[in-house]
Amino acid sequence: MAMILVACGGGATTTTAAPTTTAAPTTTAAPTTTAAPELGSPEKPIQVLFVPSVEADVIVSGGEVMKAALEEATGLSFEVTVPTSYAATIEEMCAAPDSTMGFIPGLGYVLASNLCGVDVSFKAVRFGYDVYWAQFLVGRDSGIDSLDQLAGLSWAYPDPGSTSGYMVPLLELQEAGIEPGEETEAGGHPQAALAVYAGDADFATTFYSPPLLPDGNWSEGDPPDIPDEFVESCAVNADDQLWCGDYRVLDARASARTDAPDIVQKVKILSITQGIPNDTLSFGPDFPADVRADIEAALMAFAETEAWGESIGNQDFYGWTGISAASDSEYDGLRTIVDLVGISLDNI
Picture (cartoon, helix red, strand yellow):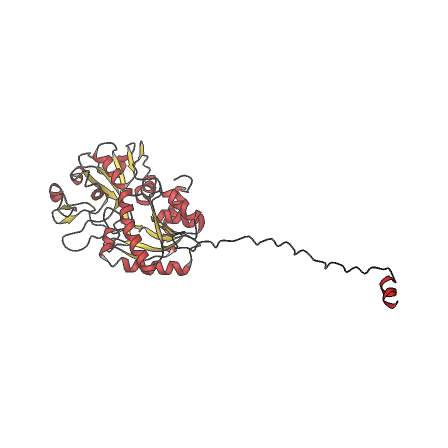
């Protein structure tokens, strides 16, 4: 009976609830971020810019020699670039302020410094000179013996952004009240000299480097050209150098010797300008200081090697026989020219 009562009594059914499960919250994965490549890595090589003042293939081949030396010395990656003009070189340095180094002339440096703070590191040394000059070239049989005779004559120059090829000569012409006639942008210093050689221009302006003398060094104030008695002997020797007797020609005419081995016989130096601070190696304004220091040390070491002569030391390249430290204040004279002539990146 007790069992029956237990079995029948109460009538309530006990229900055991199913365990409650809570869905796990949905987690949104954090976006994957890729670290920016480091400067000097293969993904972000340091850009080495060269102004196109001589033949581009000469710059590229010599630049690759420099690139190899810098990469071996620093363990960094570099990329050689030859922009289309002086202005384009400056624009590229300002557009990539943390990854560019540029071999730019003094006046180009001033424009770049004024524009975005590009900073000079080294200046060129050429056969002991840390300044250079601009020269006025005319036909040897032209009968032109003074600057004032250039009024109204056709003028060939390398590039309107060239310090020695255009800017400094322009200022000298303006100060003398001389207005030339038709102007032609030749595309480079040797091309400007060849324009006079070929009769396509009455005069040209290019860089001037003093000749190597048989004894002693040339000094400012000495005659700039080869002595007349040695002109007819000028020829390219077996080492592909332009010699006139015991005088070696180093100005822009020597860069044109392949196309015109008799260029000294046909083209003379009318005059030269005052000294101009030499070309620069400059860095973008935000270039990392520690990386810059490593590159500077590597370049100083490279300048002492024979390979330097196959690169920027080649006379068909920029002809830097060495480098020395430079400061911004050395280029204040060129800043004056920029102001007097009214030069800017827009009008070069």
